[in-house]
Image (tube, rainbow over all chains, first blue to last red; front, side, top):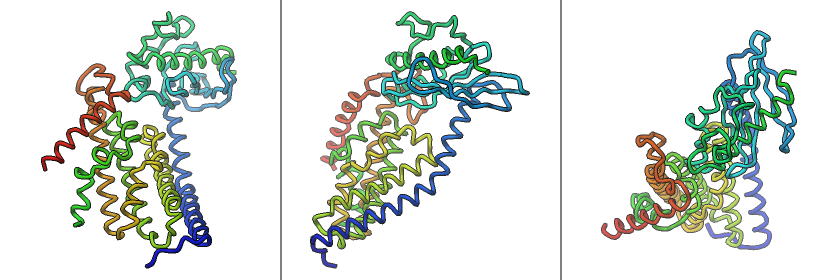
Length: 190
Length: 194
């Protein structure tokens, strides 16, 4: 088959057909994957909530505006037999080495940290990504931020920073502090 | 060129990363672990094979002057398909590679093969070329990622066998260039002797 001439009409028609077909294919794929993508996101969040709180049977959602920061935090208040067992707070910081880090912080009614899970991060692989490792996260468990200073040791706090990832560690502390402050101001259970 | 040669050229003789030096942005950017390298390599292979198929099918009905924009649209469509599918079914891998998946569009390897090979050859040769080149790319990325993970983290495919931190520079970008340089030298040596 001979090559098509590069006439104006030929070129316009070719591009029109190609872009048309590709939009059609993409909208099809988008429709197909819309469900699974939303499901994967939801599952991830639910897993994180379950991971940072004690056993619970019902949960309530609300948005709380922190004193510092641009975005509101999502509070997930959890109840077991209508007794308040803790609050999971989806918090964030923009001070990570590559910007945004999102954490899910589980706080007990007395303000102590139950557990923390990393929701989103773009830190340097192998360095900053260690904020998601047990070794780093473990030091926060059971700590009360009223007495435990959420700053890395270099800045006069109580947190052991990750070797060669002080900025990520600092950002992590800031995000937890933000969640705690908002929790204290809000009372957590109103 | 026989089809067998056509397939195997991507691994050593014309390895896209180590010999043709194409697609270096993802090759250096994502290869902080062997698993990331493999995932990126396989995603690129898929896009490469699909775009080679389509380009080789429509090559005679695309006027010369608009061939590049047409190829780009075709490639971009397949990349978006990979991105959406991965996001839905492999969310963990997507999170690791997220930033680099859209970059497959501008991976000169994909456009290069469409322009230099698929637009001039038959469907069968184009598929084989895409597979060979793609797997060669995946192999190169896995080796690069494996070496960096081993030296920088004391692990391979996430399986840690040396305790402690490792040589951090290999995880960071300078380490990518260092490992890459040595691997290029090694492959040139192998290609010269065979």
